[in-house]
Length: 529
Image (cartoon, rainbow, N blue to C red; front, side):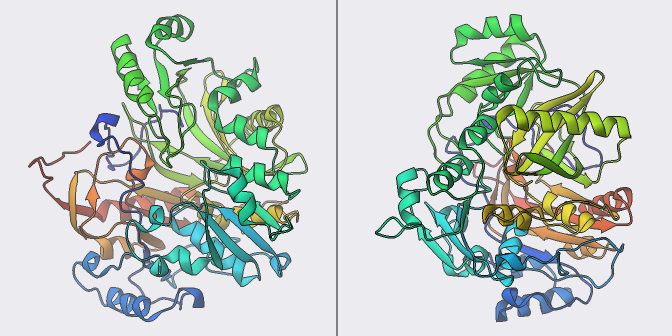
């Protein structure tokens, strides 16, 4: 992701540099409990979510217990839906989607997994249609953060957990084959940026449906994507540097301002704009010192530099089937500002003229064709400039966070479930895609660093018509300024008659939330970032 679009609304986010971290780059702090809250009477959640603790919690929430955060159990994954609907959209994460009966009797293996609510819900939905799910993971504690695995929402969403080194291809292959080498699954995939390559490699070795591993690796290695695009008008000039001595040459080639970021990372980690040589040197020194990814894989320390392009950023959500790329639609991307740019909100669908849409879709399809990506979902980030569209990144997976919910509520199709259909060799009935209504999500970031004591305003936020509040932090969590999307502590989400209404309601709800923290150990109290 690349910076440049100002964030609307009064929702400040962290503008920290990497040095604000302790250097260990821990997994997403606080992302150990997910709950969905609505203050009004609700339908019963799906059976897979019901247990005594969830029912008791939902009862307490609806009775407006003060300091609700104190009642939150880290393992909750609640869906308490409002009965008040804002629109008659084509789909809903709480109503039956299109028939996914082809999942019945099939088994897939997922190499690691996203931690947020929509992906966990997708697992439950797929299993309700008869799909058996194995989770391959190299470290359960990455999901649980020291808590009990059996109580974690992800544990209840899969049929089997296989503990295996998910960075080792041979180990992954052994985990899904028997002693005779017979494959035990009908499909193998990953939605984790750090594991899409090894999942594609394993699927290819087992003759299972999947994308070309080279195409996935080219998309993930952002400088390789630039090289593959060549001189097409929607590419961006770049330079990959591995020493300070190469910075002068990069400046001569690219000029200022430019973007500095790791060649292969996710969640906008390390992305920043640099305007001077001093800022470039500082960015290089910080980024080149990161020798492991956020999931522990080794990194070279190289830094990718790109010409900064001014404009409005969107993402295009697609599903490529047999080489043809189908488009779900276009999602807006609101960004916080200098020097660290992270996502603060999305709306769907973005209205475009026929000419704009045609040029945008051509750029996205041309990008996927250039890297040989012929099978699977993709989340392509694109910037609209005065001289046309520019490709920022192509991520060979479904959109993360709540963007899948946006697409599903407006189109009636689930990108997650459609991707899993492809994983077992079944073509999803994607087209025609009909947009009905609009949806918006506002991501919440702490404005202070310290230890979370409570969250104020939850019930006021949930009382906004049509809004659902999703938080994934618990009392006692250490809130840190971070330079990536992992510092997000929750969402407000709304599906409405159109995207403007949905955004206004989600923004209003977000404005009620206040994350109250105690001073950190050094006696500092962070201000607005």
